[in-house]
Each structure stands twice: as C-alpha cells, then as structure tokens.
Image (tube, rainbow, N blue to C red):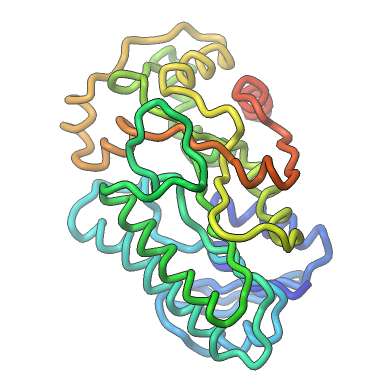
Length: 300
C-alpha cells in the first residue's frame, strides 16, 4: 500500500514506521524537517497548513495522522493549552482538506484521538459508545474528532484511534516512572481509584496495522488493553515488576501544586474497554498488565 504518515518520529510513530517498512508498504512521512532515506519519502510540513506535500495524498491508499503537540510535556499554561488544541485541530483540518482535494482519495484515514475523550468516568467500564466528557482534554478530543469526521463526506473510511496510556521501554509514561519505581519511590496518585486505561506499545502498533487492513473497522476505536486497572493497581503491578516495595501515595494537593491543571489528567480517568477491537477479532499480544510490564521491564 501507499501510505502517508504524520507523527512518525514520535514514541508511537517511530515503531509504526518500522512496521510499515517491514511489511513492504511505500511510506511518505510528513515532517517538520525533510530528510533523505532509502526506505521512506520525507516531505516538509509545518503541521498546520496544506502545502507542497498535498499531492502525496492524491492516489495514496491510506493516511495515518498521529501528529500533535505532546500533552504530557510542560505545564499547562494558556499558551501550552492553545498549542495542544491548535496543533490537533489545524493539523487534522489540513489533512482533511488535502484528502478532499485529491482526485483519487485514500480509502482510509486513521486519525489520532485519546481515551481522554471520555473525561472522568468513575469506576464503570467505558466503551466507544460513550459520549465525551466536559474537561479540557475531552473537549480537545471532541473537536479533534469532529474535524476528522469531515472526510466522511468524501466517502473515506475513518478510524478514530482513542489511545490510552501507551507503555513501552523507549519512552512514554514508563520512561519517567521506571527510575522512580526502581528507587522504591513509586506510589499511587491521589485516591488511586481512578481508571488507568493502558496499552502495550506493540499492541498500539498492532491495532493500527489491523485497522489499516480491516475494512470493517470504522469510527471510534479504543486503543486500550481489555483489562483496564485502577491507578493503585497499576502502581502495585509496576512495583512488583521492578521488585521494589511500594511507597506512600502522592496526595492530590501536592500534584496540583506542582503541575497545576495538568494534574487532573493523572488524578482522574476512565476504565476504557476496547469493544470494537474485541468484537471484530483483534488479538492482543499483551492483554494483561502483568505480562505487559514483565515484557517491558525485561527489555530495559
């Protein structure tokens, strides 16, 4: 297949790019920095506007759009929140516009989103049928997805990839947590009851490849493992995986003092369940947290 990818230099995009090359696809990457590669065509993109890269979409079989300003990096100042929102809305709008203008449109657009779409949801299980929350991230995800949904008018199959917390040994949340837990400083956050919807990096990439090839997959797709846990359960499992005792919980007020509004992302959550993936036959390599953490810790 001919595939256009954004966000290919990120924690998820990097392994995805390797998998696409391995599987023999012809890949064009839209990146802020154009470069040369024997395996990939790189085209410059500012992440916001339609530019000289647009013809690459014409005749492509698929577009995988993962680009966006990192949510977990930096305090959520008004300027940071604007970057989080604008990078997703403007970037997605540019991708949709390029698809609409193409003479031969891609068959599928896989567009990033997050389980943050649901907002704080207590302890009951959430599937893709649930509506959005009302907090900042929920509203960003809602607008992000609404922008992507415009491709439906062009007859393009759309997959909205609502990703949970991705666990891997080369970045993401665990890159920050593992050093603390190995020193015995790993404690649950706030009450510890909040949902922790996670997915192993291998399954995140696997789900994207599966959705790419499976015409029956469309609409919201929870990219999260079938056994979401509480934050306290995650803490216990990671302490067990690194062979260290647990530490005292981190009070909510301390997180808010240090992180501001961003702390709410850690103190609240949802137990997101991958209903569409389960119903349509995706087999998770790492369905349980214990097997995922064992694999990741062994590789660090």
